[in-house]
Length: 266
Image (spheres, rainbow, N blue to C red):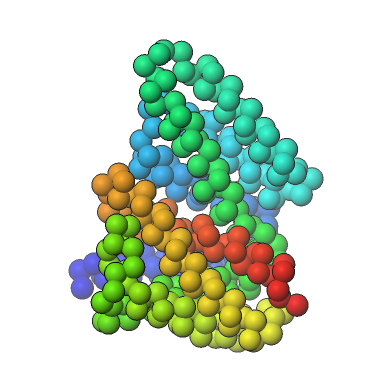
């Protein structure tokens, strides 16, 4: 109950913040706000990874380039990734001047690129969804929230078969099945509250797929925490952990919904 008392005020604030940001902030400014939020998650991720040689400035420039490509179609992603590669290569040529730094060079170089490929790139698909209209983002949020809740409550009550014991000891096969089923129901519910141009059956099976991938995306982030021997990615959100802990499901599911809409929603 003590943990719930901490979580509820934070949850209330996050719901209000998300609603007003998505509903009323124009896409260009939303992209800037999202860049700040993702950068906070990146800071938490870098603390978990604990590189020896790294540059917060270079990492933020990487993020700005990727965010710019999503906000402004005139800036192609191919150009951005080429610029990121060159920028980071130059940084490490300058930074790695002592032989002892070679021991961690490959890991540190990989961490720089993981901030782009694992966080800035997939989470900026939230901007793409926002461009389509706020209800598409609301659809994603509702499906993930209800699917996660179904997994938590039903998994806690009936879960017997461990799913990812190394990454998430409490996740179960029963919880996964509950996530898929409750997410599917929430897909139908969501288009009633936040109408989008999609057939109900398509919304239901799309939501089920998102519910499944949400339960994959979450424990992947947990692997980084387990490797760092941490329970949460940060402490910024009382009762919820860090920013990265709140965004973990969206890492896989934001690009997934974007492509489901592009390929299957008619």
